[in-house]
Amino acid sequence: MTGKKRLWTLFTSMLTISSFTFGGGFVIVGLMKRRFVDELGWMTEEEMLDLTAMAQSSPGAIAVNAAARVGSRAAGWPGLLTAVLGTVLPPIVLLSLLSLCYGAFRDLRPVRLLLAGMQAGVAAVILDVAWGLGDKVLRGRDPLGLALMVLVFAAGHLCGVSTVVLILAAAAVGLCRGLARLHKSKEGGR
Image 1 (cartoon, helix red, strand yellow):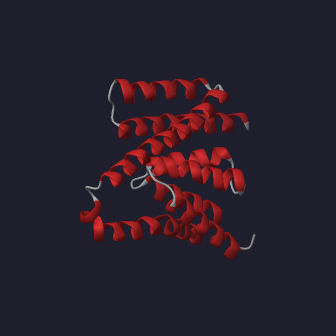
Image 2 (tube, rainbow, N blue to C red):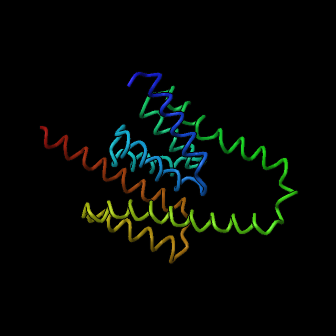
């Protein structure tokens, strides 16, 4: 695929995903995985999982961070800019239009019901993404990964530990593990 065609595919994919996705970052990440891993084969599922983790731990909107990472991976700096533009354009246009007429329709019963229905759909998509990511950890049978998944869930949902603290702690564990593997491989190479 040529550079321009790849950028166009990246832009139209992100524009379409962003235009028809409600619920934020975790929803859009699942659809990005389906498009860029399953359909286009531009990256592996493991790469997408790593990019998602980086996007989640970076400041800002997860959808924009994930788009930036996927775009960068797919086509460098031009891909990063193209993917971000495709991601932010639909919400900017939609919010601009909605802000003009919000007062006229905010109290209408059909609008309230529609938004409530969309919340249920978003919850289902987020559950699907969490199930897919958790299934990957379970199938890997990595004791540290399994323990970390259980501890993070318990700390977050049962003990109320801040998500930021959990992300930083998991990142620290991953960094220590990576450094230990690097050290071990260097010793094995001698």
